[in-house]
Image (cartoon, rainbow, N blue to C red):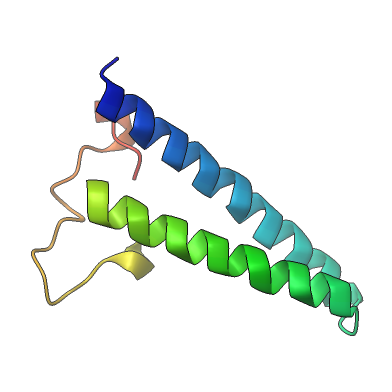
Length: 88
């Protein structure tokens, strides 16, 4: 595996980890909406996830449809699909 591909995989794994944290704390906040520590945790990891998604998009193309930039070249359909070795 090339170094660039390893970096892409590592960033993709990081996005998966922080996305899990955001999803998990969202479920907790559904039942504990006034927990300030949980709100802080959510805000922190939401921002971390947003930055990681932006970095991934800049380096490798959009990973989720909400990070695709319609004013630029439409890369969503030109990336390799998961069965082709892509991570979209």
